[in-house]
Image 1: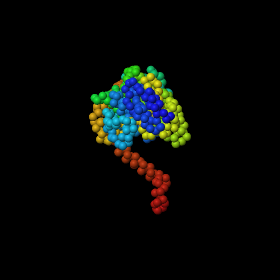
Image 2: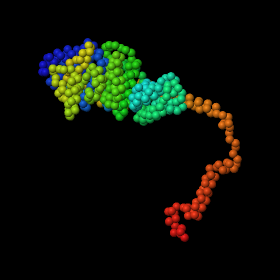
Image 3: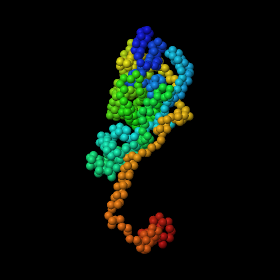
Image 4: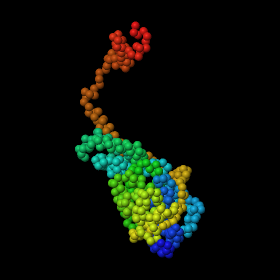
Length: 519
């Protein structure tokens, strides 16, 4: 395990690639950095997906930031899901300090601060490009998963989509879906049942309540127009650098099901719109999903199967997906098996369950003669990781303990003023941050019901349309509300007087409080 020359030969042989491959660090042996053992990242296999895992504070997010920078340098656009809100600094130049200087001295590399072209995206419309999607783009399957519907209720949602397609009723926002549910439960129920079969009022009522609940959780914010075009994620700036799109979703942590379904919709849209690419020298887009456990923690089996299917198929479109999470076990085994690049930062062993997890994690990596993997996982320093990836032939590279390069952009967030400057110069903000309310199912159905109501009024029998004869003066006086009130008051007074005569009128309290009432 201490053979340095054998280690260098093994790393050089395993991490030498034909295509473009930036150096992301150097191998380490027995705690020492071996600068001759450079570790490179082959862009050709970046569409094979990956995993960045490790405990809090071990450097996962900075590894994600560093890899994004190298991809941008290579004209590869990036989409980053920034859950914690600490990746916006990639748009600003970094600053050197003693720790960075020491790291690059050990790596025998030069640190050059740099900033990168960034676009700030948001699901809520706050401080960034507003991402929206229509109800139709989500489709009945994903929408049913979001709402937590059973098979019968999901069938009703599918029927609604079918009816809207057949009758050219666009489903753009939740207002359209709500109107459709009301329509098939009332005025349109008879017509729809003739063509599509009976619909349970109980099912439509349940779905309607679920939609209202979704609206209360903020669903109205990103259901609607203008729908985001995925081609805008694939841009390269005038300097030839890939745009780094930072989707800031720090306010979505309490809505993981909604968040995961939205991401699935985006992946499905990318798969549907991007052509087949085959083997490419570098990917056309790489997506990093930080805090990936939020996608899986409340996902149903059907949802996980959809994620697995998308991950399997989307790489043929030249798109890579990287999951960033604290524990590799957060990612389902079926998805984990599809991830070619694995970057494992340190894990902590505080409990027996932690030790069991670490042992399982170690068994997922290739065997090596240079490390005792199970022990090393708990000893890795900040900015160090165990790595393995796929070479051009799809063969895993040797497991290596790496000291990673640090990001060259700012390792902190942007100020509010800097965020405002980026948004002010953004073409996408001008394109998408305008509220639209196109003519859709809601408006069309309202017009249809209005026309039907007017026709019913016209078709009423003449006898019912005749005006009533003019009331007489006496009838007008009798019908006057003031006169009615006076009559009621006088009547009540007379009744109370009569009841008092026979000993039944007035309150007990009033009688007992008057000294002379019984004499």
